[in-house]
View 1 (spheres, rainbow, N blue to C red):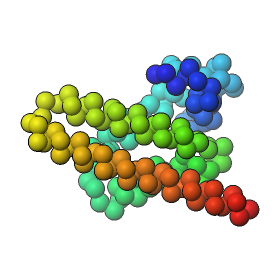
View 2 (view 1 turned 180 degrees about the horizontal axis):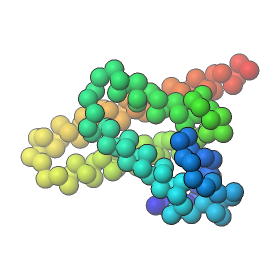
View 3 (view 1 turned 120 degrees about the vertical axis):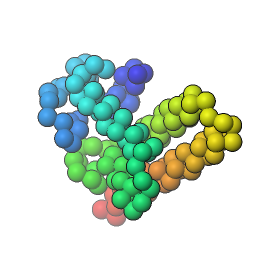
View 4 (view 1 turned 45 degrees about the horizontal axis):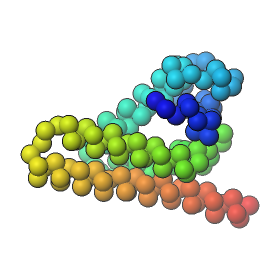
Length: 145
């Protein structure tokens, strides 16, 4: 994990994540890649990745994808959680790369591999739209205030 090498990214992992009950680091020097709060965040990311490839794509899943876009802005829950859009885009790039790498490593028949990659690409563009919508809405709300 290279995120800890960059203060611009790493500082967004400092606030307590909703649901995390363990110790919270007081500053970035205490926030190490093996800190329990980072392990908790990695578990959430793993559940998100699993949901993308195992859950049925119904109204409940669409609402989940929308919540993923919303939860990283102050609009959903903790006001101190406000991950800049550039970091969210980087996260989505990581997710796209992880899924692509996994699919390419499955040894699927070429046609199935291409269809699967195209489907994942479309899914991630939808996720990107949900994410961007909430950032746009937050910006409009701030401008009106």
